Image 1: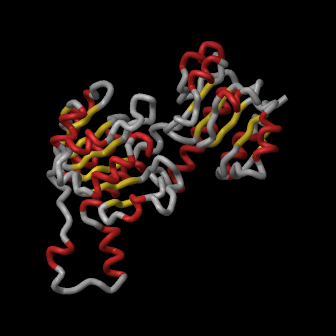
Image 2: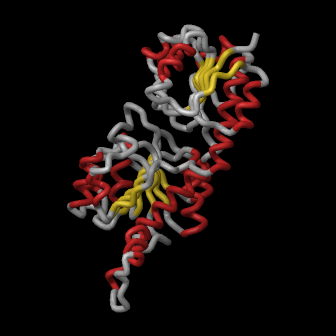
Image 3: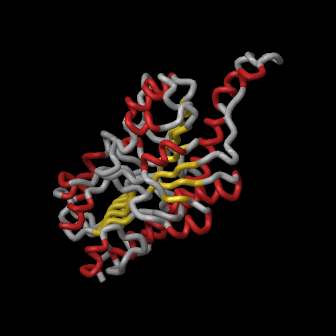
Length: 327
C-alpha cells in the first residue's frame, strides 16, 4: 500500500508524476478558507506533506498522528516547529543550495537598483519629467570598489560575495555565527563583529535565517551605527529587521536607502510607510522566483519526501536527530 501524502502548493506536473510513482497524492494548488476543512480531514491519515509557508506547529501535528516527514519547498524553515517535529520523530527537510545563485542575483539587483535609483528614475522618465538640465538631480552612488558587509555568510551570502569580489572589486566584510575560511581565502572577505560591519560598510546585505536569535537583529541601534551614506538590503526574512526602526532611519536619513525583498507581514499592507518612501526599493519576495529555480526546489523537495518515506535519509534533512530511526 502506497504512503499517502499531501501536496499543498502548486507544483509542476512532472513533480506530481514523480511522487505518484511511489505515493498516493492528495493535491491542493493552494490552501485557502474553502480548502482547509478538506485539508485537515485528509491530514488525519497522511504520512507526508510537501509545500511551503504552512505553519507546522503543535496544533497541526495533533491532527496528523501518522505523519513521518514534512518537506519544505524553501531554504528557510521558520514555519516549522523543529523541536516539536523532532520530539515526534518526524523528519523535516528544506531546499538549500539549489537557489543560491538565483537569490544572489536578486539581492545584487536590489543593491544596484537602490544605489542607482533605478525604479524611482524609471517612473520619472515614464511620467515625462526628465529634463535636459536635470544634472545632479538624477545622481545615484557608485557600487564598484565600495565596502560590502554581509550578515550571514551561508550559501547565498557566499554567492553574493562572489559577485561583489569578481564583478565589482568590492572589499567584503562579513559577520556570521562562525568564520567561513573558504570565503576569506577565495573572496578576500574579512570577518568582523556586527558593530564593526555596520560602521564600516557602504552596503549592508542581511542574509540570515529567521531564528529567535536573529529576530529584529537589525534595529535602531544598528541603523545609528551605519554611515549616513549606507544602503541596507534585506534578502533574508522580514522579521529579522525592526521595520519601525528602518522606517525612521530612512525618513531621518540616518541611512541613504534600503532595498527590500521581504517584510514582516507578507503581502505587505498597501498603507505601509515603507511603500511611500522614495529611498526604499520594494520587491514582493521574489528572491528565488524563476521557473528554473522553483522547479529545482520542488524536485529536491519531492526527492526528500520520497526517500524519507522509503526509510532512507533525505539529502537535506534538517533535524538530523531523527535519522537513526528512519535508516
